[in-house]
Image (cartoon, rainbow, N blue to C red; front, side, top):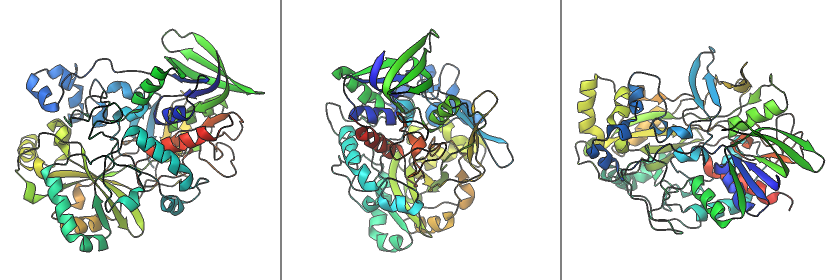
Length: 520
């Protein structure tokens, strides 16, 4: 088989590139795992009332695994979500070389964005300037941000966070928020002069969630099934775009195919691939190869292809701090019928470092997801949850991340990914943040803050960073590998640093920029 362009992977980066290269000469090769069974209930309340415990908890009650074993992220435990977490294994070690986390990349059709929170934020020039070493200007990403937001449909408001989140050409109505979040936002508006002086901005998140019918898709019902089901076309995922591209017949989609290696020759690239079901080898020839396997899997593939089994690559992550907070005025209020996990967003400026806040309501989760994180006995925790859930929020605090010489990606003896990550962004400013929260009736304590392990949020980047002058295991500003002319990395692997914001929209915009810049 011969193609003009082959894209490896159907996740956020691969699909954004495919939108720019939509013609008969483009192919996407992909393992393309899909959910083994659908999640039928329309809402979480329906699922609880049905009595179908297997559908809710899994055939082996895997949704309860966090009660007595190391946690798998709550979005990946449901049986209908497991397929997302099915790629190459990785492990994370700390300064003592102890394993602190492990997981897998994604071989899913649509990649890890099947399980994302759908927050879509732009990197601004001030973000890039603050962290440095970006060979790309924010203005170069702007047209692709605009196109992608129009393609997805993004809900939100122009509010105090607009300068932090970057511009937006059009926003759908914001997603509904629960009464306690509405009360919190109202208190913020009344006291924001004092609150802003303390460094805190609060507002509505920008979500790739349809709050009204849009582009042929129905508005979302906000039925609280996000932790159990990836089949919502009203919550954007790359699967939705992949289906559109296939239906228009302008690209070739080759599922169940894994890329095992590549060889660049004069004028083309030869791919060695295998069928994951039959094991049959398939040779594909292409003018250009775009690697969009995810920051870790793309790096591993490049290391193996260069026989650099002893190499040590840079790697970035920014694991959030999880801070539970209570709004006493909302305790024991009636629980809402509909909700979305992310209620509000914020920016906290601590000593010049802009931290991002994602403020979650836990109503769409099972009580079993929350019980182990409360400080009392199970019986007392159940009583506590029943009475405080309406006023309970969990704040995710995200900090910027830049490369550190001690944070490295390596391959072990089995060629699996090992991340040595002893240095994480500093946990600082929580006391100051809590003081700001108290001004608007929100209370918590620093001792209840939990540092999530590296890899908890799967915000990996920087393994093959873009440089003006690439050296070994770097890429140029078009993601072109340092030793290739026709092989480009286009996913999170090429981001040189991580601002505090969610990275998916920027990964997509940068992949689209690279694809649009390739010679025709």
